[in-house]
Length: 228
Image (cartoon, rainbow, N blue to C red):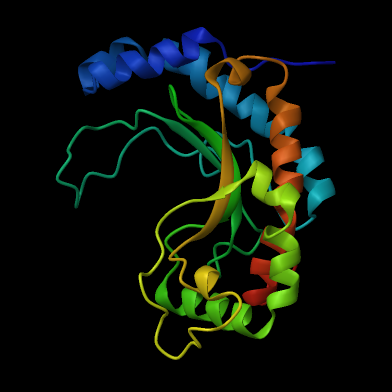
């Protein structure tokens, strides 16, 4: 049966939070956060468990209130110049079962007024992880091209983040994948409108997105010696 999770109240809460990003306001509006954002998101994550397991048995949609797929709304401000206490967006990461032992790619969903998106990959990888992926790309170009250079992938998704202006040291500038080897992040996805997030099309859209990005996630897992 088609299900909706979020509503215009979800986005109104996030817009209001952006204008009133302080602990006093948040405490007074905690019930709005729970009703319009946190609890619906946890229900969505729970409903993603079965379809995600069909994509990969090694990935988890974890609906626990603490320590699960949903990111905390609280910002870590210890080393940040911006001391506002709360995120003005809500994100969920659907991670690999071994993500706590090894840096691994994940599926992801982001909810923010005017900037909702979903996709997957690995964002800001550590230097050793980035080196492994680049070396794997250089040695195994065919499977990567099949995963992300197809017309179907390029029509639906774009890569996020920056590239190096020059090839990294030690790589052939004429390599057929040199533009991909220059990527600083190996993450891709697509935006969707706020209205879709409030509709019963959200769950099937996420499942379709994760299915379409799965070959890229599979490739990145292979590069990092992870099962998919």
